Image (tube, rainbow, N blue to C red; front, side):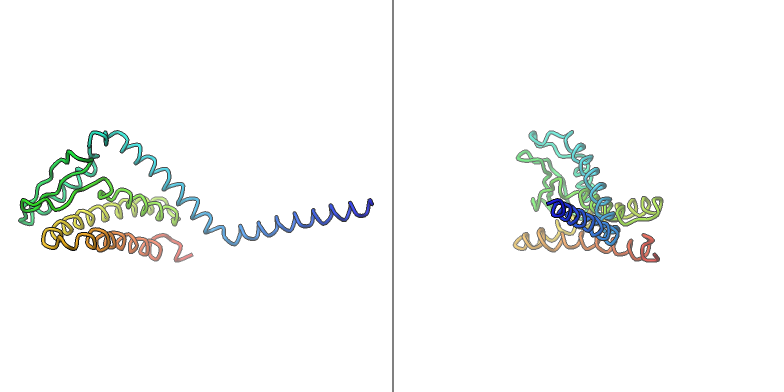
Length: 203
């Protein structure tokens, strides 16, 4: 009886130690990925919460649009006006958005999701998670964020122009072509970061 109990506990102890060994081995093997995942999620969650806190200042029930989206809409208007096009931005009394009017025709509305802040947070989270040098990381995030912002303004301007002349293709233009444009830019910036600037390629 004593021998059976001894063997039972010995086997349990062996299995437990084996599990610990396997877990340690897996942790060592996947440590770079787990580190990346934790840093990515930490950055993304923190800055998303901060952004949500910023958005909470605006009364969406009263159709108030956040100031970043207003700024992006006005910058789009400035770009098109500079290029000789007629565009105005109007408040929308029906929902928290802005009406984009091109050549006297209402072509689209701008909502909070069009300002590219969420895309910039996603971009920055990846760069932060895949970094070695903090100064270089911050500089790349700032430069990359500015590039994404500028290209997003250009994207909206091109979308307005396209929707004016090709309204029948709104679903494809708004839902596929132009989102691919901005996410394609983000992907290229990620590749450039990993291959040239992050420090991992050399390591």
